[in-house]
Amino acid sequence: MRVCLVYDHVYPTTVGGGERWMHDLAVALVAAGHDVTYLTMRHWTGAPPKIDGVEIVGLVPAGTVYAEGRRSLGPPARFGLAAGRYLLRHGGRFDVVHTAAFPFFPMLAAGLVRRRFGYRLVADWYEVWSRGYWQRYAGRIVGTAGWLVQRRCVRLRHRAFCISRLTDRRLLEEGFRGEHTILPGLYAGTVLPAPGMVLEPVVVYAGRHVREKRVPLLVEGFAAARRAVPSLRLALYGDGPERARAEEMAARLGVAEAVDCFGRRPQEELEDAFSRAACVASASEREGYGLIVVEAAARGTPSVVVAGPENASTELVLDGVNGAVAREATAESIGRSIVEVVDAGRALRDTTLEWFVDNAASLRSERSVELVTRSYGEIR
Image 1 (cartoon, one colour):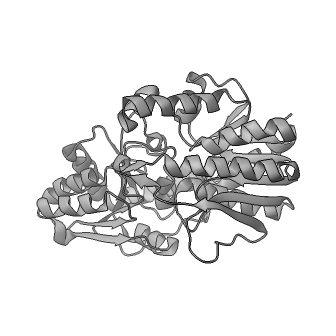
Image 2 (cartoon, one colour; image 1 turned 135 degrees about the horizontal axis):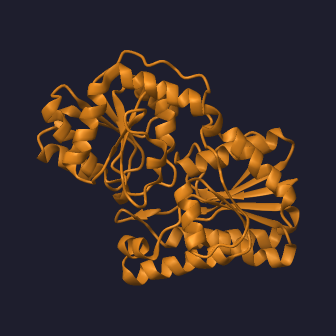
Image 3 (cartoon, one colour; image 1 turned 90 degrees about the vertical axis):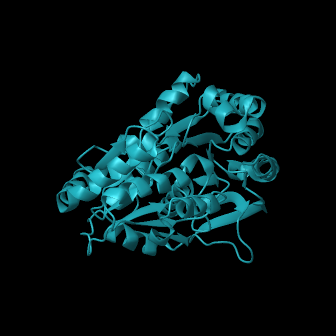
């Protein structure tokens, strides 16, 4: 079967959960004997990244993906137009076009060109935003426009895969009427949990430094926790437009000497940090899945996340079993949850490992890949 994957990011040039899922899907498709092309934006200079057996096509330069802490409109629009032009020229080569729904323009283009070539259209829905959230995120006018574009994609005839119960429910609420499945898991690491190394009083954050991740708020929560546990340190991995604000917050609260900003690091270094940490923590307002919770649990490390209507990562955290859910997006609530997890010590690490072992089969990406590839042959 000839499959075209479409996403504006590609692992390991960028390291979010969406591109890692697309990478793992591409690898599995090649291993199963399928012909795979991957359309993306050029986030690199020089030679493109390599996925053995996959033709990676960088259609347009990435440009400035984030402006003022939000996704900018220009790059996804340019990528959508470029994807449409590519499929107009080459769409007849493919049996399936499998795209991430967001950032929508490539999906709209693939749906339009399908009328000419008749390939099957599949979309991964990492998130579905309510109209209210769109307006909070981008303002009343731009947010309403974004919600209308999302709604057009929802109404487009396609096979949908969602990565959380939250996203699946939102997709139906927005009017989707086609075949839809919740993917059981996205974790592609080892099934055998790595026992924690020497435990250190370190809280780890790994991810993008953008507005919805609320990294400065996490720094505030860490400072509150440090009043109860003075030996705590905070390790921030990743980069983005909010990194300077997080560093400024640490200085303003007098904890700069206890906060290390490492920037982007290889996955192996992150996994080592997870193994040694007292916990991983995120103050994120919005998550489509929460892969870091699973990655940390594979090392016996519990997680702290924040409850919220847009945060699907809370589906993966059981209080007192593999971490804690802060009930409010405040420094005090986050700080209390961090202290709770740190004070639980080895006992919580043991139950976190047990949770991972009990759920490893459903958390891993192999079952998700199997469901997706089987669907290719079922779509009419």
